[in-house]
Length: 415
Image (cartoon, rainbow, N blue to C red; front, side, top):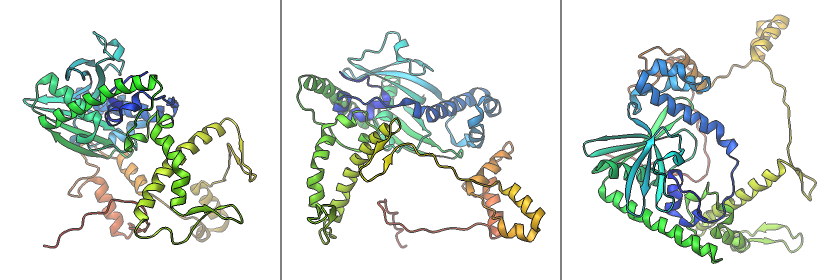
């Protein structure tokens, strides 16, 4: 039976239709509640800013996000647009209709109700339409990485809905990442009619494929999953035939890398000289695939061990471990040492430490109306504080080197 497909699942289903029909592993939603509630509170604040202004909206904000929202640069954020607008996309007809606003994703309240056989419901954080161009904005406040907006099923589906309802020519798609310190960065793309037409056709094919794979799976036949970055948080991960095939191939892949049992100790060892410059890239990609599956397996074992200890044959136990480490309140400890042994001993024993984040928070707590935290010209309050610290020799740049996968910076061309 297919899962309920909504906008948040659109990207994964677009890229891998069988993920909607394979058995799903129910995830513990409670662990996501703090981040989800924080995100909702930020969205609510930004919505209220456009209605009642920042000061009144800050007063309404929950205590746990008040410092963060106070640090937000509202001139750099799209306030004043329509928020929490729900649409239903009819993938058979490639049409859309607006369901309502501020529905809190309770799509069952729509009138008429969403048709699961041909409609996909989606809620857009921010929308706007002017003349022939639309705008779709989506706030992200966690640590997950998403594709660029013009390659992301969720934002593309939002653009398709907006175009269909308002008769637009093109649409701005934007992901707005809100950081814990109140800073933000954006990823913005403009898609035209050709882009949206291509997505609509591909999404229609994917949705038709979910119907096909549902029948195939019900008949006991194999399904053909499509692997990619969308696998990371897929609830069908453990039932995925691609992942099962990978697990079965791990021994052979390890042997291909030169991993084999020592005939004397029977321990697995890596033969020297098997990995070379020529095959290093292939070996690394293989290791990443294997590590991904092993990581998921470890998560399951840890889940079991959270309820019951799992004894290991070498004497170790996987289970809950509580450790305690005594710490000192530096101010109190310094006061006691100075009283007993004098200021010289206190200064020798007490080390002062501070982080850039702590300085940022101190500036935010004292920011005044109209002042900027940071600016491109370096005239914000935080910019000036850091310049003053730097002038006194209090700003250090620590450089560390590591060898790990990364995207190299583009070299500047010589003039």
